[in-house]
Length: 133
Image 1 (cartoon, rainbow, N blue to C red):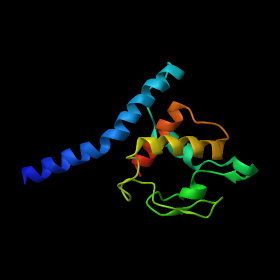
Image 2: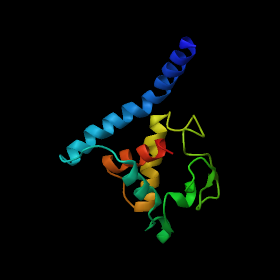
Image 3: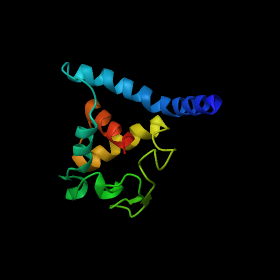
C-alpha cells in the first residue's frame, strides 16, 4: 500500500513540475512588475476568466466564450468553430504540461479577449484558477 501511495505522489510531482516551475517564474516576474505582489489568486483568476470585454474583431468576449464555465467540459472557439478539449487538467491530464504551448495560448487568448498581453500576475491568477477547477 505504501508503495502505491508513494508512486502516486511521485507521479503527481513529476506531472505537476512543469507548470509549478512556470508559476515560480511568473511569481518572480510579478514581483518585479509590482513590489506589493503577495501571490496568485484563483478568485482573481476566475474574474479574469469570466469577465467580458470588447476583444478580437470588436466582439464582446470572455475566456468562457470558448472554454465554457465548466473547465472540465469541451468548448468551441467562437471565431473558428474548432472544438477545444477540456481546459482542466483534472479532466484532461495533458493540459498545462507543455509550457511552450501554455505561454503561446495565454498570450494569444489575452490578446483575443483583452487586446493586450496579460501581466505575469494575471497569467498566474488564471493558471491557479484553472488548476483549481
